[in-house]
Image (cartoon, rainbow, N blue to C red):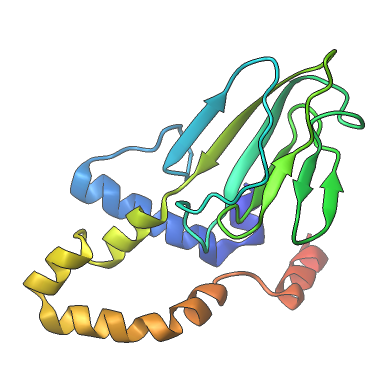
Amino acid sequence: GAFQLWAPRVYAEYEHVNGVLRQKMRIRPNFAGGIFLGAAFNFGSNVWTYKHRDQLNWAFGWCAITALGQFDARRSAQLILWELKLVIDFPHAATILLPSAVITHSNTVVHPDDRRNSFTQFSAGAIFRWVENGCRTEVKFAEEDPEGYEAMVAGKSTAVERRMSLFSTVDELCSLVQLL
């Protein structure tokens, strides 16, 4: 899908975490072929969000948001990406992938004549950290493997750079487009 195409290294992290969860915990994906660990169906006739970040989602991952319903996307339920200063017409059945933990986002209010729902897929950052810590909490990691724990703590200073390198560069995306 689009996630694997545009961010293959990030997607590989999700595959790794899903594989560990399947093997260690016998946890299966929510949906056949699914990669996200959580999902929310937001039903009601007037579904929209206030300006927010999904701080519990994995900061280096993506969230998939799908708009559903009967509404005019030019006047209602538009998606706002605040740091990017974008207001996006977000029509029925459209899906966007975004790092919802780090980009502040919201929707414009739904017009009274319109009906909007949404379906969101996401993955909690705590699960990625738990897998990275050998399927244990940081407290348990420190108790069971003090040297490994110290190495993990020391690695936190470069963690952001390592994780950012998972995202595709503009040059990589341009090369990909030329291949298509």
